[in-house]
Structures are given as C-alpha cells and as structure tokens.
Image (tube, helix red, strand yellow):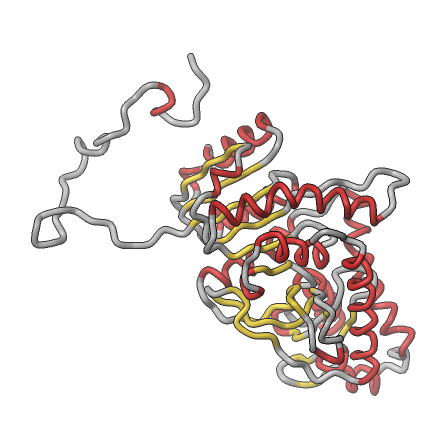
Length: 354
C-alpha cells in the first residue's frame, strides 16, 4: 500500500467527506455557508533541531492555523512532518504541510528562517558567513516573491548580520525584517538573576543588547524586580558584586549556549520557546517589548551612515517592529553598545554585492 500522510493520498476523495456526519447551517440570506475568519500561516525554513523545536512550540501553543516546513532533505522533512501529524489527536487543529520547494510557503504571514551552514573545523567565521549569505540568496528572494506581505524572522547565525542580509535581499521595509537577536540571551540573564534572588524569572526585568554573540552588552543599570532597581541593592549587600563579577555574569550568559552545545551537541528547546514567544507577540498583536535585532542606525551614538542590525528593546505587533525603545544607558553601556555595532558593521562591509 502506498505510504501516505492522508486518506486523500490513499485515493479517497475528500470533497464532501463530512457531509454524512454534519448538516450544513446557512449563515447568510442566500443560504450559503461561508467562512470569514482569516487563517494564519507560519513557515519554518530549515527542519533541523532548531527549526523543529520552533515548529513544535508554535504548534503546541496554537499560534498558527497552518505551518509549512521547508528543508533540503526530503526524507527527513517528511518524517518530521508525519511525526507531528501523528500527534493530531493531542494538539490544536493545525494544518501541516512540507516540501523541499519554497513555493509551499506561499501566502505566509510570518516566515522564520533557521536554515544555515554549520562551521567546518578550521573554517573562519567570515567563510562560514559567506556560505550562509549564498544560502540566503536562494532562500530570501523566493520567500519575498511567494509571500510579499510577510514578516521575516531570522534565527540563523550570525543572526544580526544575516538579518541585515535578509533585509537587503528581500526588499521589505525595515519594520518587517527582524532577527531573534538577544531575546534568548536576555532570558538566560534573567534566569541567573532569578536563581540568585529566589524569584520567578518572569518578574525580573533585564536586557542583553547589541550583538547576539561575544560583544553583547548586559544593561545592569535598568535591571529591576517588582519595579525596584537591583544593582545598588546587590552591591550594598554583597561586596563581591564589583565590575569583575558583573563581567563574569555577562560572560556566563554569552558562554551558556556553548555549554549546552558541548553537552548535547546543539541547542533547541530554549530557542524554540524564545522564537514562539516572538511569534505570539507578532501574530497576536500583543505589543510586548523584546530585545530583538533591528536596524540600530542613529541609536546611542551609532553612526547615521551605518546600516547595522543589533538587538534593542522593540515593541512587536502585527505590523512587525512597531517601535524601538531609546533606553537610558550609562556612558559605559553606550560605549560598549557602539563597540558591538562597530564589530557588526565591519563584518557587514565584507559582504560585497548586497
């Protein structure tokens, strides 16, 4: 018997299949049944560990009516889709489709790009970046063609530079191209502080900004719990909270992903929850603030002629980026942010032809 994911693929006609069970109810004067609710479609490009963690979390949180999966490996892709489809009885009703052809993403409201090349031992970061840019040249224009009104959410690394690349290749307005940025880094930061203070991480307000990487900046000046500033209190009660200790905490946040990778080989669940958190804010128009990678030109002394993407607290909704918070930073924090921007800008300058 033919392997299939639906009865239609086994030769059963789906047209009117439910007519023997349900009597139609007319909902207009002409007696015609209509369906007025607009369905929401999310596409995930890249069905690796990260892409599938994102898709699974979106599915369990009931954030989309249709999820389209795209990957270059057809057997793995079909296996991942079937594995999720077989859980249909335990999940919200969501249509799942998959294909190696990016045309399956047509009509997406949100397209999430997780595809990317892995670093080869001995390969330079710039060479890896160039390979990922070549991949984006194939993916992004096709996504823009099939879903011209979509919001692009880039998760592939290096995320800040690839968000810049996606913006250039898509031709989309800047509010509709977003990088996952330091949304997860900030969660790791909040977790460490919450563990120390013995509170729920959701009650800790703390941001990592700048590059999603080694030059990220911990904004200690605005850390608070229940509206109360934290840093002064910690320094008053613990003499060990000096500049060296603060840098050690920042370094622990930056290195935490490397630790997970060294232990299990990759990261997946935390980034899955982080991206689903962004998806909810965007598609449900929640207007929540997230530190995500956005065009940072003109913020905190970043040069007006530097089209650099890095993470700043941004208000997200159905239109994408609805606004970027102009945070009050200390001079040292602003200096570190400008240094992070300079690092990213220098890398962007090496990408010729965009």
